[in-house]
Image (cartoon, rainbow, N blue to C red; front, side):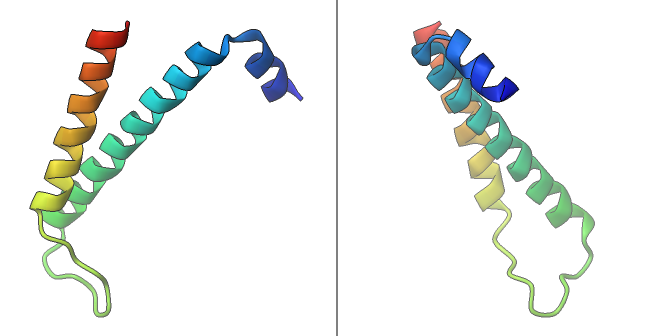
Length: 75
């Protein structure tokens, strides 16, 4: 019930902006974790999908760039 009360007191535009920025932050954190795992693991476990290191690096750079662009243009 408390969640609904907060959602009703915040303007919809502000709530949408906060949600999109929070999603970009979460994506950046996940990609940083993937980079850390990729660099720390000596050999991947059997049957585990392994992506190229450039994929999470591109994800971090895209997420941070979009977050900064959003803050710069729409704040």
